[in-house]
Amino acid sequence: MSAKAKLLKALILGAPASGKGTISSRIVKKYGIEHISSGDKLRDHIEKQTELGKEVKKYLNEGKLVPDDVIIKFMIAELKQNSDKPWLLDGFPRTVVQANALWKVQPVDVVLNLEVPFEVIIERVKNRWVHLPSGRVYNIGFNTPKVMGKDDVTGEDLIQRPDDKPEAVLKRLEIYKSVTQPVINFYTDKGILKNFEGRTSDEIWPKRRTEASGDVAGSKRTDADFHWGETALWRNPTAQ
Image (tube, rainbow, N blue to C red):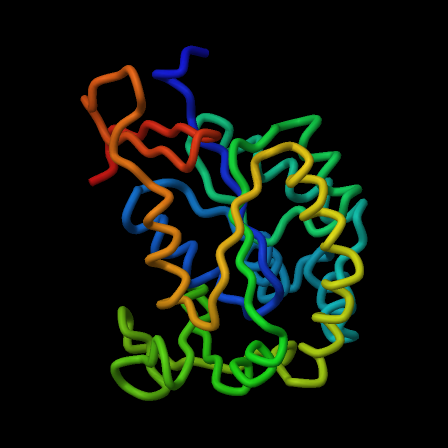
């Protein structure tokens, strides 16, 4: 595949409640790429009470990560269904085993790593509300919904997830620190990791935008070009 036809395969990393969903939705809206969220996909299975959903719910209620073999099989199948599209992957991989499995099937072009202090996350999660059908996330104090308790787009009720309770989040953060740092190291070694530090999504977003330029060296801008550093290129004629 030529560089001109290359489709961006990007990944966003960050601790639970670090703002991955908010940043991802802004990227998707601005650049028109596919957002593939493992969390959203799994919550859909939980809501529908599929066998996978029941299994995943048990782990989440205990504040544990879904086992590698379960999540790898599920997410690789999801990605194969979107192989002809540029995408931003959120929530997978979370371990080096998962990262290696993904790399063998579909190497990613760039990895965005959100760095938010854990104490900020613990405080933030107390004020996090979600529109479950769409996955839109709101935080009281920043990214506040226009009407308290209601989704901005549909007007439907917002909820607080059971796995967003502070004690559950703290346990997830401890697990994240122990198992996900090696994933960060994995992509650092590949030379494709970009770190973005901040306390809120509104603080991180402008930093992310400074990494983007509208043109790709050596080519004319005949469609929507996007360039993150020097590692990734995506062309999507439908993006505005």
